Structure formats: C-alpha cells, structure tokens
Length: 374
Image 1 (cartoon, helix red, strand yellow):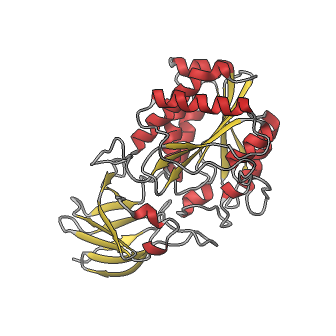
Image 2: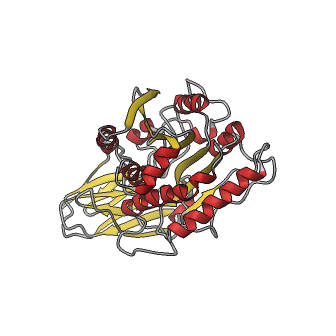
Image 3: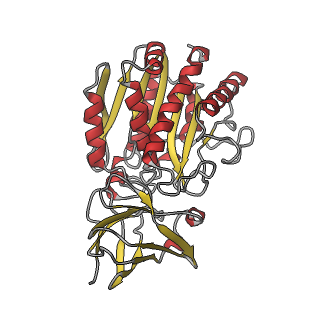
C-alpha cells in the first residue's frame, strides 16, 4: 500500500517530494515572502501497522538547525494526545520512523494550536464573568486580533503570546494562564485582579498561525523585530498592541515564546536597555526567584547571553516595553525539545506542562504583586 500525505488544513505545512510505499521524502515550506522555515504539520493516510519512514530532506537549511539535535517530532492519531516519535537528524535530513495504529496519523514539529482551537478557547474565556473581550484590529489576512481585559486594579499587566506562530507552546501556556485567571475560586486570580488590570493577547500572529508559518506574519515580517517602528503595511499586529499599551501604560509585561535549541524553560530580560533602573532590575530578579520556587520546570542556568549595557535590541518587544514604559518586562521561552532536567520519554515537553507553567507564572507574579510600583 502506498501512503498519502497532505497539509491542506489549518496550520499545515509540508511539501511532498516523493512517495514510495511507506517511505516518503518531504520538504518544509518557507514562510510566505521569507527565508524562515522549520514548522511542519501534516497528515499521513494509509499506513496502519506499517513502519513509516518520513525524511524531511531540507531540514539542514532550516532556520535553526541546532533545533534538530536530540529532538523528537510529535505524533498523534486523535489530535489530542501528542507523543514523541522516533526521530533522528543526520547529514541535513530529519528522519521520522513510526508505526501507526490507525490509517490516519498526524505529525508536527510541536503539538499544534490551530486557529479553530483559538476561536473555541476565545469564546470559552469571553463568556467568563469579569472578562471583557474585544479586537484590537484586523490583520493583513482580515483576522481579528483578540484582546482580553480582566481586573480593575491600578497596576497594568500585559501578557501576550505567539508573535512567532510556530511556537505553539506559547498559546498552550495562555490556556493555563487564562483558565487560572478566570477561576473565581482561585486566590492567585483574586489577588491579581484586585491589584491590577490584566491586558492579554493570546495570539499576536493569527495569520502566520493559520498559514503554517514558523516565525512571520502574512507579509513575511518577524513581528518581534518591529517594536521600534511598527507599520500598518508590515506589522499591524505590533502597531495595535503598542498603541493600546500607550493608552494603558505597562508596569509588568511577559512575552511568551518557544526556543528551538535550548532544552529548558528560561526567561530573557531587558538588561541592555539605555534607561534601565536598579529598581527595574531588582524586581526582575525577584520575579525569577519567585518562579524558581513555584515551578520545578523553570531554571536559570541555560538561556540567552545577557546584553551588554546600552546594547539591547530595541526592535524586540521586551526591550522596547521596558525602555518606553519603565516596565518590568521579560520574554519566557519554552522548549520544542523535552525539558532536560525533568524529561518525559513518552510526551516530552507537552501542552499540559505548558499550561501548568502558565499557572505557575501567575502564581509567581501573585507572590510579588505588592512590590510592584503603582
């Protein structure tokens, strides 16, 4: 039997080069008008009980080739439970070997978070008591940029995710965070909504998400390099969010991402911005301490190099928000690989663990909410 392969669905990405029985050579498509590519998501039909050998032949030219080292693709038959598949990388080719139990099986770079799921979750949260739901504006593909506000306290807290659409763990994190914030019985949620107004954008790049992009929007723009000068033509998503931040101010901000190469959860800060203060740095350090106590899945040993004084890249959101608003700002990174400190051989770093980290990040914020300046 010869298998069939498609990516013709929400968030799909693969190109079929050749199929020979249960073997296939594939390529990942580039983001539209961009050199970036690494996200893949496709369906295989007709291979039940046979060992599939799927070779992604252009993996060696992808955006982050170190991301393939000690990496495992995700696979599912029900699109709910995503397990790790036997995966290897050699001579620029990523090879996935898997024997599916059913004739329909899906493979992905990480557990997908489709726009259909996004709409379902937005509707679920919008119906919660105390939540205000609106749109900040329309994207280049005509999608709404969903925006929630909760609470009525004087502090302005911003949480936003998935500037890079292939980093789907960011929106899984949002599920955990928003479920906690909208739980009326949760003491962390009560403390945060009493002390602060929370501004939340669960997906900053719906166009790239639907198109199956790794890193860019419909115009091929990396949104996290547009915060110094966003434009309606190239980066309306950043233009909308930054404009709303200008109305609300920002005291604390967290930008949620995923990292291809580093097998750990970590936070990148704003140490290189020109106007940084000792108080900003002190509060940033306090947050890291609180999160370390709250989550065994968080660590501070692995991460990005710290920027030298006054050398921070102000086109990136964390630096721009810290500089422009005097905020305590940070970027949370989660792995595509498994968490090396607490590995899970079957599921790896998973949607459920992303959700739990979202809850824990809010708990850490709740632990220090009294320390933030009003």
